[in-house]
Image 1: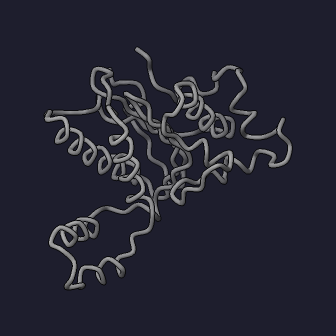
Image 2 (image 1 turned 90 degrees about the horizontal axis):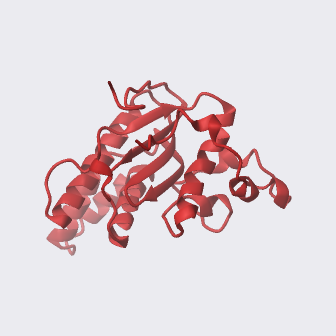
Image 3 (image 1 turned 180 degrees about the horizontal axis):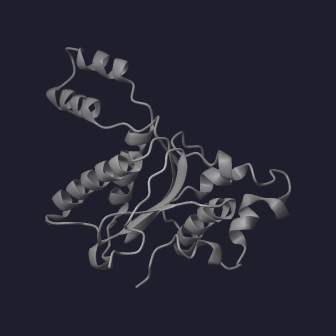
Amino acid sequence: MPAKNSIKTYVENSYYHIYNRGVEKRLIFLDQQDYSVFLSYLKEYLLPKDEKELYQKLSDSNISYKEKDKILKLLQLNNFNQEITLIAYCLMPNHFHFFIKQKSAGTIDQFMNSLGTRYTMYFNRKYKRVGSLYQSVYKAVLIASEEQFLHLSRYIHKQALALKNQPCSYFEYIGERKTLWIHPEEVLSFFAKNNPSLSYESFVAENDSMEVLKNLTLDEN
């Protein structure tokens, strides 16, 4: 029997909950560098790639071979700026969650395969291990209602806040940080800016049931 949410339905211009965790529920982030590297990969995939600037740097006779090699790798790197919108995320010690909108059907698969392969190569090289890092293929669940749309970012952020200091997009939502490759605008349009009781922050702090997301979330078994 296939694992929960491993069979995916890809629809253009649609919203998804994407998640995965370590093989045998093992840690996939062991230190701050691991979190930082994973986030740097997201940034490179989601920000526009300025190829003109990269080629200009490449033609500079004063740059080192190491710098040239880095630029060539960036030029070859997949870029999803026009196809993937990251609405919310959190990175937990042994798993991660993304709230994503894809433009073209199937782009998520390209994005997640690129990210997963690249991070696994980094992790295996750093920790001198071989084999799969993740429990199985990533899970992708189509968001089917406005209620699910609203509650998914809340679910993601509550997980990170419960452990404290876990990397997440919550601070973009409450205005304490601005990150160009994170887009909270659509979710925040449902909340008041000047009324604390109707703010996004108060919404996340509520303790009501997450029943609306029961088919969208990580299976604890």
